[in-house]
Image (cartoon, rainbow, N blue to C red; front, side, top):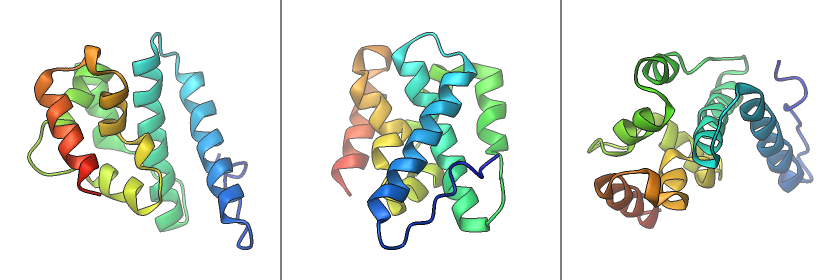
Length: 130
């Protein structure tokens, strides 16, 4: 239910962004991550779903991302996404919404010890290119 996070405050866009961020954090907390890296990676997925909601005006699940998480696990899924040569749609949409700190790439850079050096390098390149 996106009702609680669909705050539209045209005169106060920073409040709307803060509300979207908080809603994303709450949804990730409910998912049951066991480490900070896992929690932040889940926040990234929920943040991406929030961009889809904003774009399409209805709840949209990041189905392919969730399938990959189910198959690989959250950390290996993040590793896979960020080491691709082409940036993900999720990354692009989060940057457009000013939430690049919720991207998988940002998660990798905050927790470099959890990911490969290739994932860290690619994430840094992407975020430095903004």
